[in-house]
Amino acid sequence: MIKIADKLDASIIISTGNKKDELLALDIASKEIKNGKVSIVDYVPLDVAYKKSDLIIHHGGHGSCLAQFYYGVPSVIIPTHTEREYNARMCEKLHVGKMVSRINLNSSNLKDSIDDVLNNITYKKSVCDWKEKVFNDFNNLDKVVKLIDSL
Image 1 (cartoon, rainbow, N blue to C red):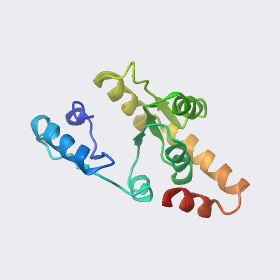
Image 2: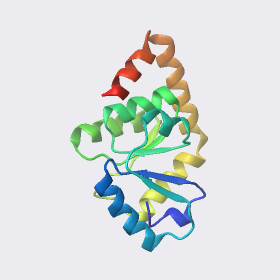
Image 3: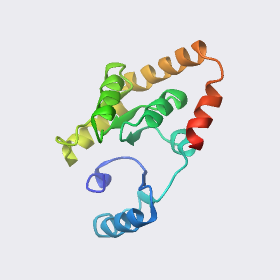
């Protein structure tokens, strides 16, 4: 992400998940990025991240995948193990996100996937169509999402 930040017309927030990794990422980024487009933090609440984003890049966990339907935000998914790869493949099949395998992950593939999801309106349309379907088919979805987010 840091290597391609200057090539994207976007503001980027990298959430590392903990303070130690945040400090490491800040050290790496300070040597690579000079434009101020990248913020690195240890944590961003799920609802804040999705409400303020046009695209989420995540690892393919159930919470992240479900949140994209709830908030209507497409994704680029870099799965970290087989269960998450299954989730990523299902998101691709539903055309709400694009998977980049860790084996094939490089700056070019990541940038191409980000550009595709951001510039191809069908990803946004598809995730919003699925969001509407989910809301119409289930009661108390708000409670479920809040419960998952609180864990």
